[in-house]
Image (cartoon, rainbow, N blue to C red; front, side, top):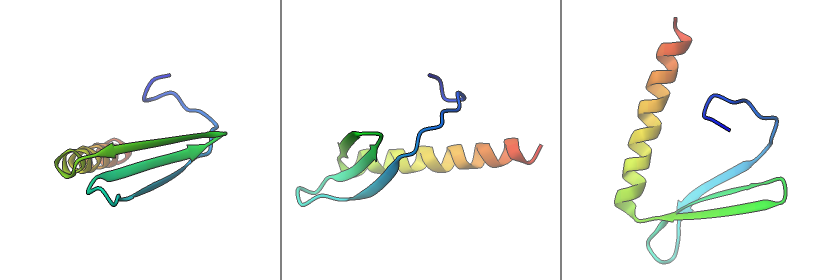
Length: 63
């Protein structure tokens, strides 16, 4: 499965701080739970990548 392959799967995502000072991205769906913990600097990098992807997606949609 690649980034452009569409799937009919529903999932929920939660993002928040943990009591250990990490940032957790928690994905839940179809009988699976995926907790991913990142230190704050890694979370900042992920946030920057998300913003860059959103900008690129807007450019594609605007064609």
